[in-house]
Length: 351
Image 1 (spheres, rainbow, N blue to C red):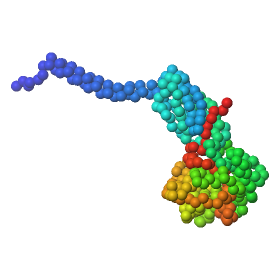
Image 2: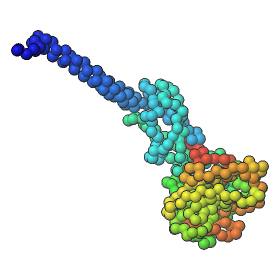
Image 3: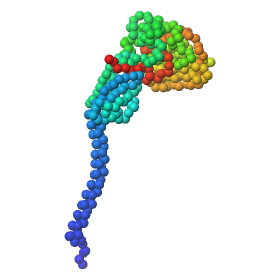
């Protein structure tokens, strides 16, 4: 019996249909894949094109803000911008996503405290285009005392705030090991009998009100357990350290209170400390401490008495002549007002 089969004509038709089906399937699959690739590539091309044709000007600076203007022929995307401060990338926040042609935008810089006061180099880039300007960083409005230790020799620590709060240096020596390039000298304390004393002044003993203390500190040797030292004493507010920790304490309220930030400090490393104290009664007072730009302690619901109008000391608890600092200190400042680390310096363009 002859077996049944498909005629050559039908077979040919079926083969054509199968080929057409496979081609259609491939076309659909490839269009999805390459369509996605094309879309992604298109976005990348758009970004690259915007960067290539980006053009802008630095228009000005105030506080921590830098003002730029899109002077190019294409849109200026915030994501294309990078900001450099003294050659290093610096974090910023922008008030725009995209700037149209001739529009103005604001970049708010974060971390100016790392570089200190003085003259600096600002550079903003977008792809291959960049604009640069010299800027001057000044201490924020309300600085009551500003001790930079830039004398380099002698027994006096001048007050750059203009308030005349000159400090008397006892047994501390100048050192060229500093926390940033803007500083040329720091003070080195021997851990036994060195300190700086500043006579009482209403400029930094504010009551009632808020004050902020800023200081750079570096310990040069290991700490023994329960070894204590005082770094800055302003009236009855102290920034002290013990057992690998730092804390801020006040003693002019109903009882002593601590605002501790238990973190181990590395030897031979500079650390930036900022402490806010709101000196009021009725449970509305507070202590806040920032370590290297990060809020590490926040105590509220405190009450402060006025306390004495006493000396300001660096490197020791001068009232008792104890808690000596073994290490270095630089850029000590007292501000009349509550400032975070990012608010300590104000920018302006150099002429």
